[in-house]
Amino acid sequence: MTRARMTRFLHTGSVALCMCLGMGQSIAGLFDDEEARRAILDLRQRIEAQRTDADQKISDESRRNADELTQLRRSLLELQNQLEASRAESAKMRGQWEQVARDVAETQRKQKDLTQLFEERLRKLEPAKVTVDGREFLAEPGEKRDFDAAFALFRKGEFSGAQTLLEGFLNRYGASGYRPSATFWLASAQYANKDYKDAQTNFRAVVQSSPDHVRAPEALLALANCQLELKETKAAKKTLEDLLASYPGSEAASAAKDRLARLK
Image (cartoon, rainbow, N blue to C red; front, side):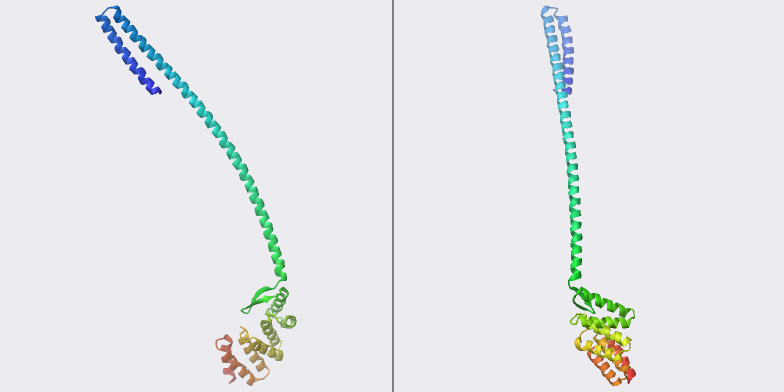
């Protein structure tokens, strides 16, 4: 029984008691005899018994509520302890996993570094793809290094040194994919050194061996220049005409038109 219900019960009992008392007084006034007094006494005893029973029920209910509250608090405390223990275990496991993740990441980093180091060393030993003057081919590491060194001297204007390195390059790497470009730059270095005959031979070799090479139109124009330097005007005109016929859309062809116009 709840406290509210017990309160209503006591209130109702009190009202009933008052009514009974009033009725008892009225009955006593009307019937002043032993039977009326016994009835009143009996009624009072029953009301008192009901009040005692109600108090007992309230006491029992309060005790049960107190017990339930104590049990609930104990359950909540146990749940809180379990939760704290679970959090501590989770934190411990998270720390372990984070350490494992760091170890794995470090291992992967070292493996990646070793793989890169191995690949770099392998690349130094194996042929690699290179692209020169629009052509892609495989070149040995030493082959690429020697060509780059010779071309670097040419670009710096050190034509004698470039000529020497390019001649050595062509002797060492006869079948190199660099050969058309190396021959062109060798002829250009010879032209710069006023070695027009050898330059003429090498410019012609570029066109004859690789007519589809991007440097072929330039080689014909440079060949005509060599012929003009050697006073071979007729041959120079023929070379310029061949350039216009074979490579009409090239930049070298535009220069050839102007050159022919001045020669007429």
